[in-house]
Length: 444
Ligand SMILES: Cc1ncc(COP(=O)(O)O)c(C=O)c1O
Image (cartoon, rainbow, N blue to C red):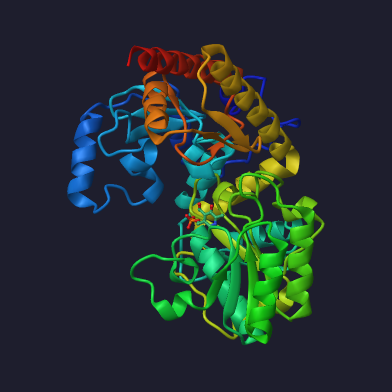
């Protein structure tokens, strides 16, 4: 029974999820790999990996948010940096120490690490050949299913990362409108078009994007009237810590339509988390294009740009292509995720579980008497706000020492795998960390 291990009766989404038939010998491999008794081979300790990482990677980690200073606040912080196993909501570091994880791989995992149905689907796809010179049949099947659950999606095109999908959305908007200028509000990944002030990005590229503050109707209206008939797109990350005001989103829709520009929503974090179809599924405002990624494939590399067929068809005029965009493993993962969402209210469960985790951490703060940290955000993606980076770092170090990983300066994400035991352990670990922080500060 693949799900009992993760959900322990408590956090299971309302209906039972499908169990795909494994049609290849891959089944044995999955059973072996998902065995709880998998031995952790301890060859190196964490400090060794940190040193080696700095030796071979310029910033010590290919994902910026996983650098030591991003995890804890400074390069010499005390805490795990490299993992050897991640199953459910539990991560084991290279020293064999287990932690409850609240970060869930920057929100790319919503079911749980190594979720059995996803793993089975992926292993089966790999066993059949991950790629060929022809397109995979699975690409069509997953595309059809996405068009069925994402409100704006008449057509889709797969890519690998959120940044790529957003870059493709902007390319499509520029092609469709034959205009260059974009008004943007939010974070859209590391690629040139979206960079506000990064070295290495040509000034001429930056000048084509006007960044406006979120939820500011006047700023948006002024920017649109200044850009006028040069405007290709209004690009919005709708949910940043909280839902946007309805007025702002409705205004964005009106303004884009009034000047013939394309409205783009970035649903990389919100898709398959707030609602299967993202923020737009309850916004009553439908963008022309949007991008999904992260939880859509539960930790496998897949993103999608999707939207109205007229705008998506601009792909026929320009060039958006990536050799491995339709490789089988990530599409198979997405197929398993879609089956979960077909048969269970995953997003509702994520909200319920997230609310319980937030309550547990809030209780730990109150019980310790520590002043300063505040819990903010939404239940499915919540954050701990600190009054001082030094205190935040010390708390994160102490929480890790007590077996819980929290995200520094960004979201913690709920997952179906956060069962009752895990939530109890989160509260206990956070409690111990807050009490120790309080005592350390009192002794200073
Ligand atoms: C809203 C949003 N858009 C785009 C991205 C970029 O996605 P990726 O890191 O997969 O390129 C992120 C990543 O955190 C994101 O949160």
